[in-house]
Amino acid sequence: MRGWRPPPLIDNPWLRWGIYLGALAYLVLAIGSLQINWARVAEGLERGWRFVSAFAQPNFAGRWGEISEGILESIAMAAASTVIGVALALPVGLGAARNLAPMPVYLACRTVIALSRTFQEVIIAILFVKMFGFGPLAGMVTLVVATVGFMAKLLAEGIEGADRSQMEAIRATGGSWWQLINYGVQPQVMPRFIGLSVYRLDINFRESAVIGIVGAGGIGATLNTAFDRYEFDTAAAILLVIIAIVMAAEYSSGHVRRRFQ
Amino acid sequence: MPVTERGGTRAWQRRDRRRQFAIWAGWLVGTLVFVQSLRFISGHTIWEFAMDAHTQAWDLATRMVPPRWSYMEKLWVPLWDTLNIATLGTLLGTLIAFPIAFLAARNTTPSSALARPLALLVIVSSRSINSLIWALLLVTVVGPGVLAGIIAIALRSIGFVGKLLYEAIEEIDPVQVEAIVATGASRPQQLAYGVLPQVLPAFAGITVYRWDINIRESTVLGLVGAGGIGLQLNASVSTLAWPQVTVIFIAIFITVVVSEWLSAKVRQAIT
Image (tube, rainbow over all chains, first blue to last red; front, side):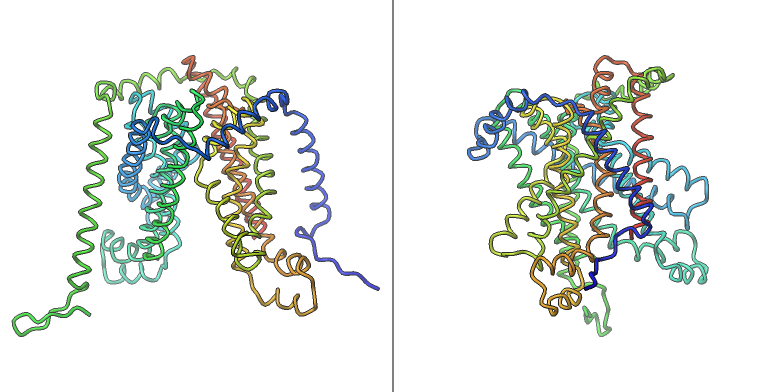
């Protein structure tokens, strides 16, 4: 009887076994270099259990003033930074599209995008907190920078992938550069761009919950304090509020995106 | 089509009055929210500190150059830790996400009444909490160190990989599965020969994609004590050793760019 086996994912046997061996060697090295204090882990498990049980009875009332303040701050940061970031991303995105921009502009805009995308929001927040002082302003500027990188990259990709013939038709009528953008490019990329802006609002809220850890305002600061005080019931309440808002935002942003696409 | 009679001539408009009004109201509400947000933020800002941002920025820039290159020697081990946190975290997260995605996909779930909502709940709650928050939590539970970072990255990856994978499973070609069913294959065989080959490339691509996001995320986990290069960053920032911060930024930049390039190459090769 002849057996049959499904073909492997990687055809070349040398490459396949090379990858397997390399992965194995890496795993051995990586796991070997981990330094884990198992005694500390065992000790912490009881604390972990306390945290899990805190989810069963979260304490919303104890610090409701601080929680609501932090949530409002996070929402304000997310809303303001999305509007400003999207507005700034428009020119950068246009400049980063190879089929529209001359070479020097293209390179400059691509550099801006690469820089803002490479660094995690928290790292950017550290710098802005140093510059603007503690508080939501630093957080807002951080999120603006991150939004510009994200939106400009996707806008540029959208423009580069747009149908050439529509742009050519506008050029053939003798349209100026602005008319080319307005009638040849904008109708093609706008629906996706609106959808992505809504998606980014969603991301910005999620990120605003994090950058507070380094002092950039929002609910993250409240959460950090709760953990530092070992107030697990308050921390659980904050996490539940974050999850609820993120779920609501995701649901409604999915709704909006379906309408525009 | 909204056409109105105006003095005997028929005028055409793009939208009818109701839609026009809804759009106008949308802009009004949007503007109000934006202005209120700005007011709220400026109310919570100490403007004396914010106004001298340009001098602070200049001060920071002069302190950050020249970078203290000799500090690089001390960064190799943290960089290796960062890489391990991202890779082992992705691996662990993917292992957990794989069965969850099959439970969550409409066409492979064993019960859409119980298993599917549970799997979706796991995916959603993992996705809505950032890995830094998971790390904050885990550092208080398992103590500071690489382990907290690995678990944090894994917990965050479950949602991401699970969501994209279950969407890929739902989009497979049902004809191939039917062909396997027609041979009299058992349920596990249907999954192994009908579903799995169709989603395996997508699965590999998603994993590599998440890995390169995780590299970026694991660079900051150290800020809350969860290991990696973030520990050095935190120490350097809090001792105001800005020339070291520059070196760390450059190291992070190169690591992230290389991992992004690698992940893009692998994904190109797979799909």
